[in-house]
Length: 84
Ligand SMILES: [Zn+2]
Image 1 (tube, rainbow, N blue to C red):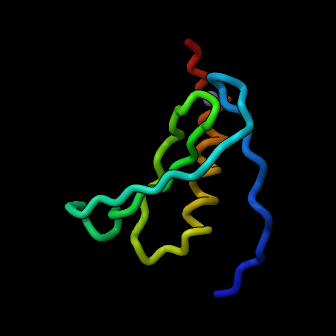
Image 2: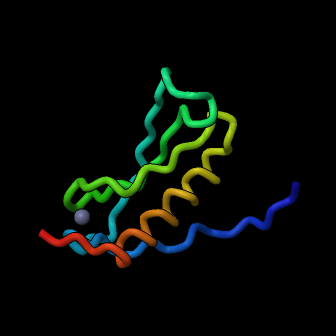
């Protein structure tokens, strides 16, 4: 399996506060089925809102999970704007 390495796609600004400063959050669910034990999320550092969580097995490369979490963030941020 060879995959083209690309830089992460840019994250859209936070729909809540407009920040472009993010970090990844990682969660672990020991009780979950082995396919869904790990969760990766994009977290906004402006208002601390979490993006949608991407659930994946522990065997998935971290960077793949991060890319998937970024994709979820980008899809969420404008398709379902949730404004205060
Ligand atoms: Zn924010």
